[in-house]
Length: 284
Ligand code: AMP
Image (tube, rainbow, N blue to C red; front, side, top):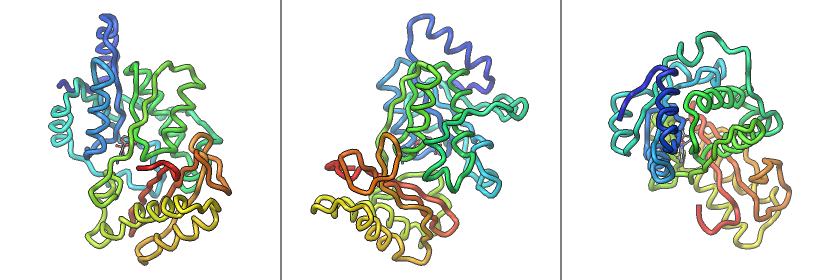
C-alpha cells in the first residue's frame, strides 16, 4: 500500500491506472478506522481492480461548536488496518492540499440537506458535498462506497452525483454494528463506560419500532411515541430527532409503507449518535 499526500500525484496515479483499463473504487473517510470502515474497504476491493481510501478530517463540515479539534486520530494504526484490507492507496492530503484557500464555491443539495441532521448541523452537508466533489475530481473513481449508517449523507451524495453528471457509481454499504447492536462509529470512542451501555438504546428503539410494525402497527405517531420511551430510559440521553421518512425522498411519513425508514439522532452525554433502519425489512 502506498501513501499519497499530494493531490496532483493522486490524480496522476488514477489517470495512469485507468489508461490501462483498471477500475478504481474510492472509500472516503475521516479515519480512526473501525470494522465499519474496513468492511467498506473490503467491498471496494470486491467491486473494482484498485482501491483508494481517502483519510481527511474535513473542517468545513464541522459546525463552530462541534468536535473538529478533538476528532479522534491514529494514522499509524489506520495505515496498518487499511493495508490489511488490501487497499492500494491511502490518500492522506494535508489541509493545504485540499483547501489552498478557503473555497468560495460550495455544493449544496438543499431540500435533501435541510431536514433531519441538517436542522441541528446547518451547513454540514454542504461541507460534505464540497469535499466529496473535490475528492471525486482529484481521484476520478469509477465507484465510490458510502455507509448506510449516514443514510442522509448517502441520499445527498447520490443526488449530487446524478445532478452534476459525475459518472461515479455510488454504492451503499449496510450498517456494521457491535455485538450489542450499537452502530460502529469513530465517535463511540468518546463514550464513558456508562454512556456506552446507554447508547444501546438506539438499537433497542429500532427493535421496538420494527416489532410494532411486524405486529401490524402503521401509525407513525404511535410508533415514535414508543421509540421515545425506549430512548429516554436514561437521563444521559437527549433526543435530537426521531423520524419516519421515505428512504428515497427523506420526506416525513404519517403511515408506515414499504419504503419507510426510521431515523434517530440523540446525544448521549456530549456525544451525538445516529442510527437508522428500514421498518419493513426482515433484518437490519
Ligand atoms: P467517517 O470516517 O465516519 O466519515 O465514515 C466514512 C464512511 O464509513 C462513511 O461512508 C460512513 O457512512 C461509513 N461508516 C461509518 N460507520 C459505519 C458503520 N457502522 N457501518 C457502515 N458504514 C459506516
